[in-house]
Each structure stands twice: as C-alpha cells, then as structure tokens.
Length: 179
Image 1 (cartoon, one colour):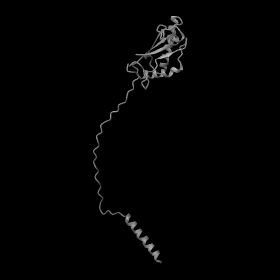
Image 2 (tube, one colour; image 1 turned 90 degrees about the horizontal axis):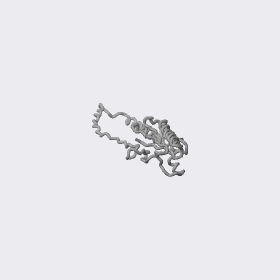
Image 3 (cartoon, one colour; image 1 turned 90 degrees about the vertical axis):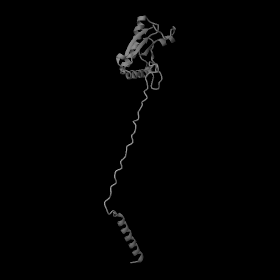
Image 4 (cartoon, one colour; image 1 turned 120 degrees about the horizontal axis):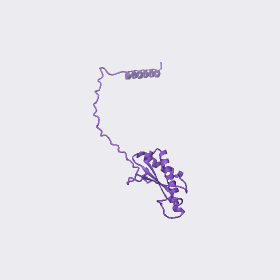
C-alpha cells in the first residue's frame, strides 16, 4: 500500500475513534437534579381603567352634542304646506335617536310651527303634522314613544316676525327640545 494511502486510512481511523468517543457519555454516577428555584411573584397593583365618558349633552345638560362635542341641529325646516322630512335632515335625526336611546331617562318635546299664511286652525293642524313627522322618524329609529311629546304652535311663535318669503321659510319648522 502506498504511504499516502496508509496515512489517509490512519487519519480516517483516528477521526472515527474521536467521533465515537465524543458521542459517549462521560457521567459515571447519578445525575443530581437541580432544585427548583422558588420565585416570589411580584405583587402588581391592579390598574384602574378609566374610560372617558363622552356626554351626549353640552355643559348646560340640555343641548345635544355629537361625538366631537359640537352642538347638533334641533330645528328642521319644511317646504310650504308640507310635513315631509328633508332627506338632508335624516342623518341629524338619527343622531337624536341615538342620544335618546342611550338616555332613556330623557325626553323631547317636538314643536311644530308654521308661517302666518293660512287659517289658525289649518296652521295648528299643519304644525302638528310636522312635529308628528319628526316623532314618527324617532320612533322608527327605536326611541320609546313615552320619550316623545308632540305639540303644535301653528303660527303663534314665529322665529322671524317679518312678513316676507324669507321669514316664512324660517317659520316653517319643527324644533326638538330636550327635557
């Protein structure tokens, strides 16, 4: 056998012996198990979670506000001789409904108003239909009927006392008053 081949065989044999020796266990006696370390748990004081309660009303406790604290409209205007809600008012009325559902101890008076045209009796009836339109929406949105009172003032309480079309448009309204 050539010398180089013998050296390679010898080196390979030595490496194999070292490998086998490295894998064997060196423990000659029983293994002592380590005692578990007793840990004293830290006493953690409970954290008090304080939720910021956002009020549905301004500081006067009577003006309804939205989630950012801004007052929301309580006056809703109508077309001449109509008691139909404007689609643009529905979102604000839904906010009123949410406030009333969250505050079942609160109630509203929905006041119906008209301009000066028409007879006293006709305007009282039209003012009631306008207030009833608001009331009907609130009830359909889940507000209890005991939380809503409807009253008509007809032409008796104008917002603008002038006798022109701009004043008449301001007087054709329903107002939601909280109690």
